[in-house]
Length: 303
Image (cartoon, rainbow, N blue to C red; front, side):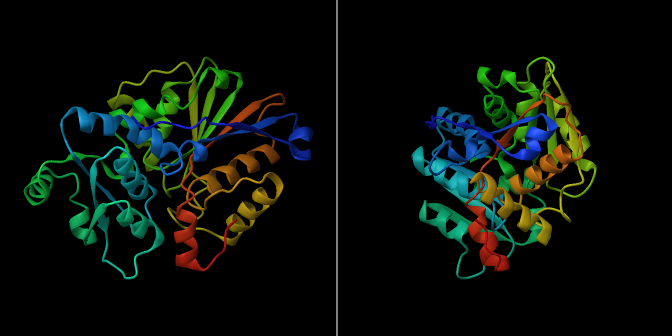
């Protein structure tokens, strides 16, 4: 199994936190592993063990050209001595960006498919065709969310985190959020910040909780108004905040997930959402490799 580093939790200090009588800490999942960062480490570790237990020597998964999941899967598979295949949405562009070139260097076979075909990625007939083309493989879904991923993300919180009244996480496919929800202690509230535009995420989370029969001692609330225009979209206000946060706390965020979540948390703090005396834990889900690709794509420098 993938071996994690010790995960530090950093307590932040700022006059605004003092004025509102709040404590804010960051659980640094971005430091959990040198190559398999953040929540992806927890999503992949049990899946790769399952692949090996089934006697599979290769894993296959899906993602976009800047996907943290593609990057992490390539690195994790390499660390576990497994072959990896990545089906990439869209046409191939040369030179490969940082995410894809790193995945290729880690040994991942990259195959590009058009967006129409990509939408068939969960259809049995399409998957059967992949088996014919690539041979036997262990399938990991786009974003990595399945039952074993949720089992992994339910292990993010430890006994030391029971002191916190609020746990905060970004939301993509919902696997990390669902695992965190399942591991809440009594009276803890999980706050989710969706990186995707739309209210559909509310149903998707509800469906995941139902599908995997996840019980919890706590409760949750999801905010859908911090997406900055949609997945991978941004505004200058978000970029400015990421720099402000780095200059004040020395912690790098990304503009896809953690930056949007942290912007939302800070706005909630400043508008008095949290009761005085609250202890807030922010989950830094990693994904910082994507910052290089973001700069390649936009020309915007990040910390």
